[in-house]
Amino acid sequence: MAESKDDKDNSKLASCDAYFETVQARKKLPHSLQETLTSAFGRIPASSFPKVPGGKDTTVCHAVKVLSECNIMSAPVRNPDAGDGLDWKKRYLGIIDYAAIILWVLESAELAAVAISASTATAAGIGAGAVGAIGAVALGVTGPAAIAGLTAAAVGAAVAGGVAADRGVGKDAPTAVDSLGNDFYKDRWAPFLPVATDGSMLSVLLLLSKYRLRNVPVIEPGKPDVKNFITQSAVVQGLEGCKGRDWFDCIAACPLSDLGLPFMSPDKVICIQSDELILEAFKLMRDNEIGGLPVVEGPKRKIVGNISIRDIRFLLLKRELFNNFRQLTVKDFMMTISSHENSKVMPPITCKSDATLGSVIHHLASKSVHRIYVVENQDDGVVGVITLRDVISCFIYEPPNLFDVYFDSSIKEVLEK
Image (cartoon, rainbow, N blue to C red):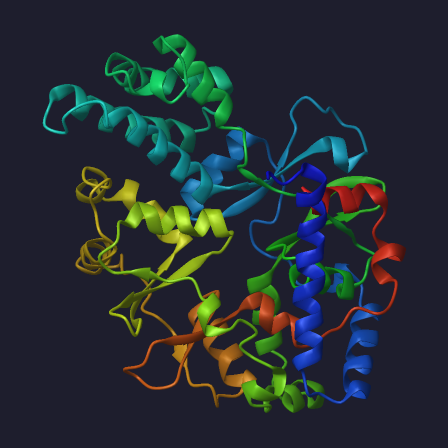
């Protein structure tokens, strides 16, 4: 039986509760230390967090251009039709995700190209059209009509081959194009859920950990312009800078087992085999709302590489990758990227289960990565993964009733989307 919308909404918050309950139950830290830290973070205003580069709001058109030029993965986006109102819920569309845009273009091209032989001139035109589409997106051409026009040639070819009609897109090119253009605006957003400058860092940390947001905008009360854009990465970088402080050193010296890490059991770790298709790897990340996958080989799932959602940009930057992306394996993708100077896929960062939290934080911060994989021995498979979210969760807990006190009904509604 299909799950109702209300059930899905409730399950999202329920999964956040379940995750944090697991974290708190497995931590072996003295409760007095956790209370002291949580209280301290509750007194620190969000405005005190150092400015994160690029943390400003913009329109959709300008956002995609900035993301492309500066290799930034996400940014808050204003609704150009909202005017200068002070209500942030009306002023902001959400957080735009660059990787999701690229995946949309690749899937649109895939839909069109399956209708034709890859050796034909028409298919070559489809490839060029898709590259032109993302190029135009990077230049800010992102209105529904513009996106529709950019995919017209590719979709027209698909319609001619009967593919678009079979997929329910439409019986003619204009209808199919219009459908794909509208689809551009579906599911490309993360929620825009800000914290006021006088709000607490505890609220920020909870949103980045328990409530699974990757970034939190900071706005000034009564003035909805974004003052800062606090990310999970920035917080972990900040924790790394706390070395030498008693409270940090006390927790950082703990072995992972004392903190219940990794929180995920080995059978729940999502992997991709090296001989699977690279497009499937990126779809797997999207469908499971994760930012990376360990690349493994064999029945023991020996780790041989790592694929991040950020790597999807190489499918468009490298012509030899784009021309063959529908048949490209994960292994071939990694080898092609590694063969280009200054364009290497990040190798997997691993640790042993007896490592300390401090060493994990150092690796995450110094390598600017979002996850570290836990292995028992070099030849063994992945037994766990530790993410930025997990690390932040180790330093805080949620005081009773804080959710009901801090989050109003509109914010709860955003969290449930």
